[in-house]
Length: 97
Image (cartoon, rainbow, N blue to C red; front, side):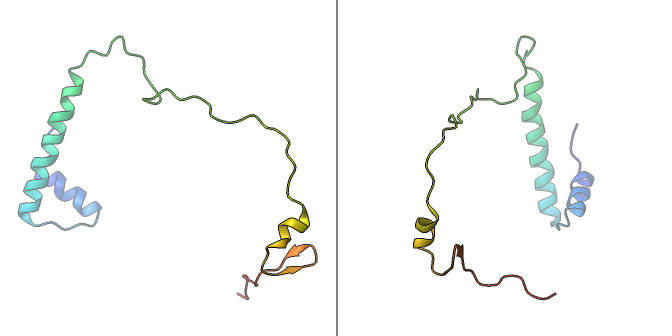
């Protein structure tokens, strides 16, 4: 399947791009070169190759859950710029519509 100048113009129009005539010719040539290179993959014998979901075999890297002591409320509020009783005090971020 070869890419034509009309194909390049169509895709450029869909992408709302404008190219000069020289750029269109160059893109047509480059896209055809890419397709020729990709065509080499069709010549490979893949009959005994299992399909993969990922090239590198991945394993689960999650750690086991373990219960740990958390930060106390006093300790959490200790470095807060402003606090109101048991809560962080922050500027109002929601205004009238």
